[in-house]
Length: 78
Image 1 (cartoon, helix red, strand yellow):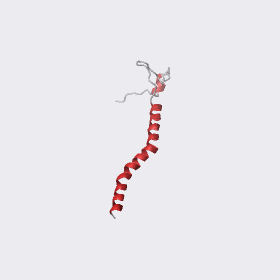
Image 2 (tube, rainbow, N blue to C red):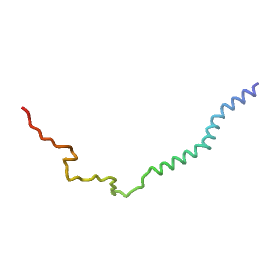
Image 3 (cartoon, rainbow, N blue to C red):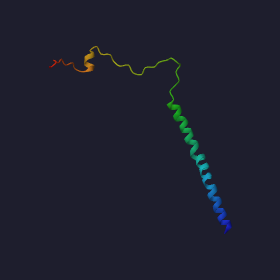
Image 4 (cartoon, rainbow, N blue to C red):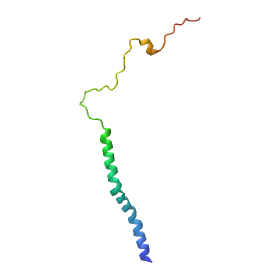
């Protein structure tokens, strides 16, 4: 009887760490590798200090009123 209780106790003590270790062996390494790949793809290439890159240049219209809306003349009422 004591043997069985001792074996059950040993199983309970060593199963959780063993399970964590096996999970790390099987899945953990792959997760770490995927994270490294993702971080490499997210980091933009490093440019020298002082270099400027403009992604968007808005068009310039000659008629500035059309972009700000229609002008309405009004009379002041007293």
